[in-house]
Image (tube, rainbow, N blue to C red; front, top):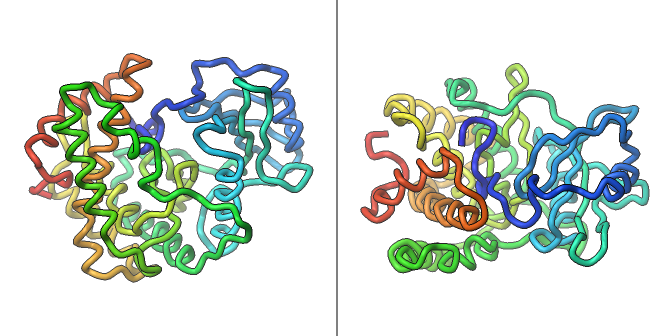
Amino acid sequence: MPAGRQPALTAGLPSGADDTTPVDPALLDRALALYGLDPATCRHIGGFESHVFEARRGDGAFVLKLGDPGRRSLDAVEAECEWLEYLTANGVRAAPAIRAADGSYAALLGGPGQAVCVRAYAKAPGAPLSADDLTPDVATAWGLLLGRLHAATKVYVPPSARRRHAWHEDGDFTSARELLPEDERDPIGGRLERLIAELRALPTDRDAFGLVHTDAHFGNVLKDGGALTLIDFDDCAYEWFASDLGIVLFYVAIDPLGPGRPPELLRMFRDRFLDGYARENALSARWLAEMDRFMKLRELVLYTAIRRVSRRDAPDAWCRAYLERHKPRILGDQPAWPEAG
């Protein structure tokens, strides 16, 4: 989608609670009170997988999320926040989670059918990246950011029994065939299932696989001067480092509403991005060579995620253009990274 509203799974596609369903004001007040946030300063700022609000207290501005516990359980959210605490303590620029008054990161509020999982994060400075930010300096800084994250996560030991899921356990992977129209289930769903099976056979050693962001696209990276900060770790999962890189390159390459990125821009970005990454973390050529398959994985699962959303809501122009442009590319087995790039 246009800068600042990238589709998610890549983030941003509705699933479970979304910003079209009103939040019970009493429930919102309870959520704000957990973190000492002032209701008078609270404003809704969007959200697709969760309701997202901004509110303030004496020590600054914060982002409050109310999500569907059926999508991300309380333990999964606590595991995300524990990892964020570790990353920020180890030099990764990310928006940290904050603890509630009782010392926990997250809480379940509401009764059956209305339950939400609540958590809050410090509001990071800056604005989401856009296509205008595809400069050599930003490409390098983006690579540095993910390189530092991967170097840190290699040695991460969760402090509790809580764990995040593995990449292939996400619903958009496990239910892909059912999300597609009947005439696409074999040609597109079948391609995705075969690719998942191929990738699951890859090694998962510590130098190549671990807990990663999985969604570091334009909208989840904030630029403040020359500094980049990573936000929205809601989709973090155990996956290959090369997939985390491939997801960034995939979103840089696609341009559903435009004529496509110039090949020379894509080459520049890829080279500078990987150069920045290599300054912080070493990834062998064997894994860099797998990025094409990981980009294809993202292309396919994003297609199915858009189909999922289209069952409930009319797709917007970006999603319609993505389906129209990428369906023939998928069926023609064209590479997700443009060959000219």
